[in-house]
Length: 238
Image 1: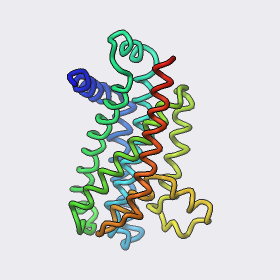
Image 2: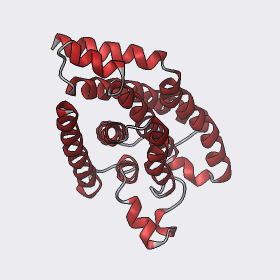
Image 3: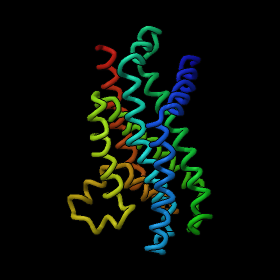
Image 4: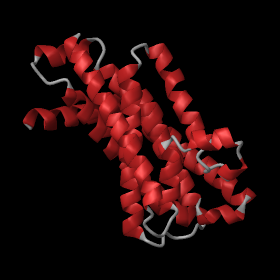
């Protein structure tokens, strides 16, 4: 337990010193918040009713799908992986520490967005705060897990950004946060339903609990955990 706690603190400090990760956890998400919030609220005033959820999905997806893979990939390549082995530290601790560190960072960003959005863009207040928080936490966990899968399976740093973008861009374009997903071709609409962003957005903007918005996220999370476990088993054998 002490090793895990130390690893989490160390990972937190590493992320704060890593310019790329800091950029993707804080600067770009909050930059998107200011830029996209101003555009959406001025072009389509009706969007203010879901603007908080839209900007939260963008911020979380940016950090989870672009930031987490970079941080995790670095933990399982080169000197950091060797230090785990030399210190007889279980390799799964690297995933847990990266996950928790990312969860804390993105939770902070989500809280900032939650409080600043209504004040800055005069958006509608959340009707059911406890339910919103639960849906946000589930979306965070699911998105970060998908980011962990990308970071573990893509070894080449040059290809890592490409694979991250393959998941990230559809998360923005096909999830319904930019425009109504019903306007998309059927194939694209179905593809969007494979992404956490789609269900996270639908859940967070709903004032009532609907299993149809939650269950797909649990399925995605379950698949991600399975893939992470299989990859860690293979890494330990290498």
